[in-house]
Length: 113
Image 1 (tube, rainbow, N blue to C red):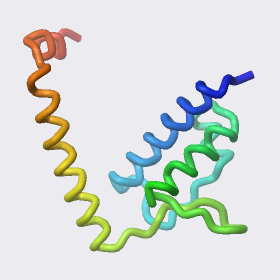
Image 2 (image 1 turned 90 degrees about the vertical axis):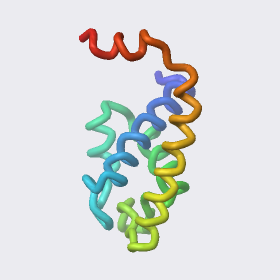
Image 3 (image 1 turned 120 degrees about the vertical axis):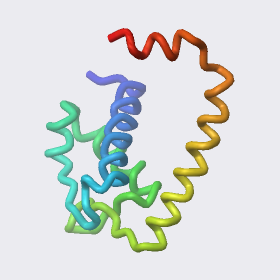
């Protein structure tokens, strides 16, 4: 039996992975997302997949349509520009917050594969 926290973590992991595919263009607008295929790919039950779809719908990355299932949301030029601008702004904030915390271990440790 899967505990609720694990379901939430699995749902977030699935939502993040699918969200990245949508944003990168790997998943095209209007592409269908099959619950059973996603569950199989992420080796999970359908419960976290449904939750991941709800999270993605709240982010306007997918749309759920009665009797048609879940599909990648259509993106118009205005939406794409807005998403790109938001990501650029967030990346600057993330770098600003991360830079003071970087140590030489971060730089040298990343090359020690």
